Length: 57
Image (spheres, rainbow, N blue to C red):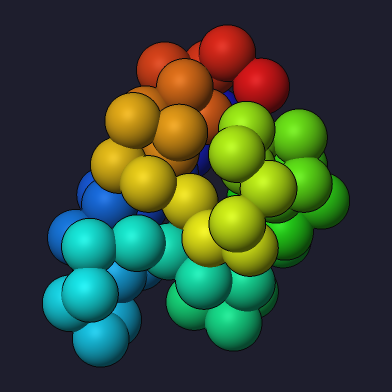
């Protein structure tokens, strides 16, 4: 199974969060985005994304 991209790779605009548009490059991440977005702010923080990267989706 391929390793998901790093947080820095996905955070294309460097704002410290992954938006839905930025997540769109990873189809699996797009599917689980709402589940990972624990605070429902429409973006993933580095800690929220780390749960996905470590396989905790």
